[in-house]
Length: 168
Image 1 (tube, rainbow, N blue to C red):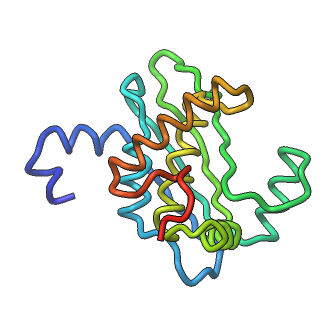
Image 2: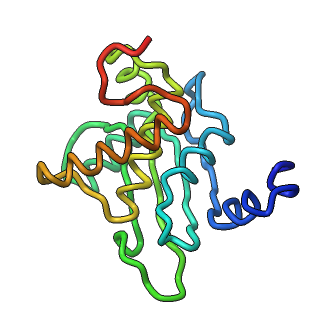
């Protein structure tokens, strides 16, 4: 935040995004708040003037329950996105949403895919933020657009292409 105080552009970017973090997992290796903020800020599209996002990190049991309750899928998944206004801009209102990361799933996927854990967290935060802004990957053309955008953002953050195999 010291840089933001000296740099008006960084101060404006920081003011665009209000984050809260709730850790409900006892995972040993979690992303530091600075990484969470950087990834979420990087994924904010230019047309979003202000955003209020809650990041919740959960264990496998809670991740499974949430995925079952909201998606009808009886397993824990890596990230869930809950947008108040489903990516649509409402005049005068910020983007509101929650991202739920399931730490054990993120760790397992990173290991299985040969990815650095913090790179995988950064990718999932970017992925979730894009969902909050209305991006989706249900159709092939949507998936290509979203993946290309994720790749650019994640690489700007200094991590390798999240869709490239073997990254260690």
